[in-house]
Image 1 (cartoon, helix red, strand yellow):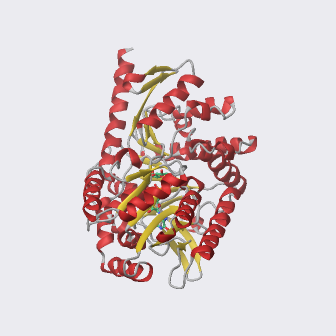
Image 2: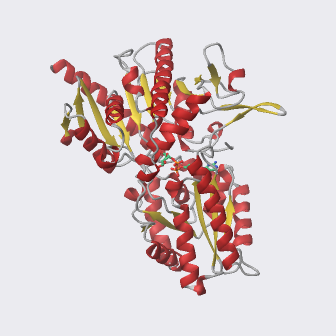
Image 3: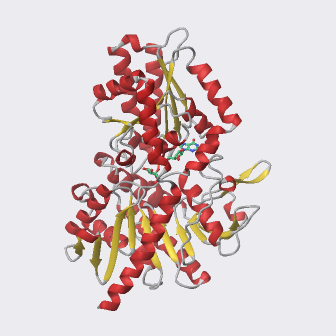
Length: 505
Ligand code: GDG
């Protein structure tokens, strides 16, 4: 948790506003209260979701239901677990939900992050399914769904309930019977797997997850490919469902759910603003002086320390390059920002240890008197430092083995007002569908990955600029605001269509 894109300094005016009262459900909360020696402090979680949704909740005075993860969260809420936020300018309600220690283990660390996360990212051998975790996942989904229903009853009317991500696959179906007039939709931030992979789940679990998701009026995925995967999974696991492939809709047990691709984006204006702050410019120049003096280049990467991001493959590509092309040694420094993530899960702790060891090994092998090949920042950093890293880079590498979208790729582009910089982007990211002018790579193919890195480093300035101009055009024309507008309009229309269908029956 760090000073991320602070909602209080958001630059953009968000016009898209739903017609109904808005209730958001996500696992992460937008504000976290923690005990510090000086008293209770408020923290903002890193990541784009809060920066995207906080402004619209402020404008609509909506409600956000989320897990109470802060050590002092309980000290500021009322008897119902509610607190008005943002602190200092209260304009909407944060409804906190507490989980028992065993449900944090079973629901969050267990089924959500040790079964669904690897499954959806096609890391089949890492999928860990336990009955008690699944029961905990069901229990937690009911608990959060119950809190949403209470909040809906408090605000009245027929609200728009927007569920986020794979933590809450069962929420919509649990909410719907209590709120038949509500519009319920869900954004699935991560990939959705094809039927053979989804089929690894026990039959009853598959069935419950799909039924849960079909409680939505609309499900938003990042890409058309994930939409197809979802439809194929439904076709295989729920033979009673009627699938209208041409209309991306599924009818099941008297309810119609639409599905569609809504690639998420970033607050482009805010990243541009950050990248031009005097402090950012100064830090960026310092980074270059320190790591890319004279003709040496700077290659950067920014990720959560997660096995899906392909950090180990990236290190192998570097090793391959410095071994096979010794003339490349000393010509660039690799700056890796890897933010600690889910460290309570053994697979993440192992990954962290392996990555640290590998970096040490490569540095020992290749370092020279005036060159450290790889510099690691293994910490949460402020968003303006990230902007400085993006700005300082000659090349930014995104090497995910699977990724729903990847916002880092878009942030790098948004920060390059100078029109320079090369993006090396895994073709297994949702972003690759939009950012075709990046140098696309297959991170599983180590030699080709290393070759592409070489192409990026050697790319002539006119080609760099030509590619970056196209990338900037793409990113500037599909911002987080466009995404919000598209999602809200599609959700409203899915409900109107459903009402039309019901009337026609
Ligand atoms: C999931 C999906 C999808 C990272 N370190 C720091 C920090 N970050 C910010 C980045 C970026 C965000 O976190 C990471 O977003 P990604 O999209 O790259 O990846 P996930 O976290 O896996 O996100 C992904 C996304 O949801 C949205 O739908 O794109 O596919 O996996 O914004 O800048 N921010 C700060 N300090 C850090 O140290 N402030």
